[in-house]
Image (cartoon, rainbow, N blue to C red; front, side, top):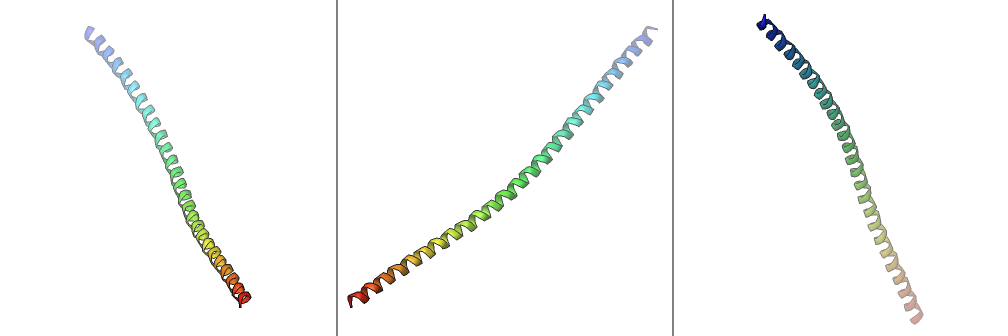
Length: 94
């Protein structure tokens, strides 16, 4: 009879521990899934930010090229203005 009682006690402890283990596994699986979902969301956000950054970088390069061309144009206009003034001076001095 004592053996049977001990066996039943061990069986109850084992069943209880198995239940706790299953609950803990389920909880950890849920947490893992939630973290995986968060990583996927953050990865999508990062990809979007990278694409936006690349677009802004391209716009920046285009703006730099435009500014450079405007500077060249202004330089040409200034040179032409100087030439016109010099020609006028030459005409006046002749």
